[in-house]
Image 1 (cartoon, rainbow, N blue to C red):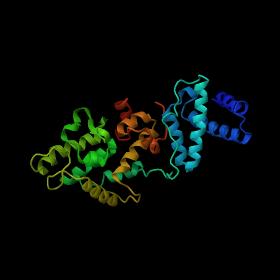
Image 2: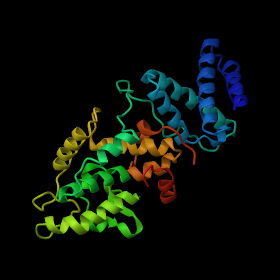
Image 3: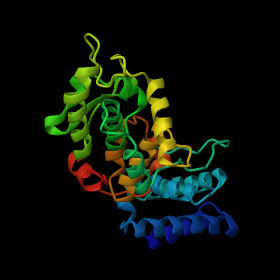
Length: 296
């Protein structure tokens, strides 16, 4: 990968007449990116896709690099990949969908839970009680799928396909996706659906999760219960149901799952929305889930 960098730097001098300091900045940025890609098993520029680039940029973000620094890296990579396209070294530019970060955007990584904290939280509901079984099923669903609270609150019974361990979700923009369920999620859902929900339901209800009065559990109700569970678990971080989305993305990606698979699982239609979560890259949905979800 170094030869292409050397040729690019020479072009900056011979064709554009850029100063040595400017060329040195490009060289430094590109060598750092190449070293990162090498550590991910990528040894040529032809193998660098947009997910690999986002993984690199996200690693810089978590390392505390400023928005200005990240934007400079984006500019350096953009110029370099345009050069490779012109030289016919590449057919596709991985920088096409990657934008500069807004100047006022925070570089603080999202809060995530470690595996011990996840286990502590899952253990909080009293599963000798009906509502405890319901709450355990909810937590398992959040942990397994990273689904949004709104998706959880409105989830219909017809969306569950427990025989094949899938749930059908509909996110923003009416985008539908099929997401795998972990074995613990299927187990607790089955217990809830057979032992608890029939006792709670008030009339004809299509929603999966119900409150103590037999009516659909609201988004606010989920948040309130979740806050209480976090407090009992003794977790000091500012944890919300959204934290499970962050945690799922980071856990799977850190184990080598493809960014594209995680993007599809979480229902992100815009690649940019996934940027804060990406850590590593290069490598179809069920196989990836079973391999990389820590509790699949």
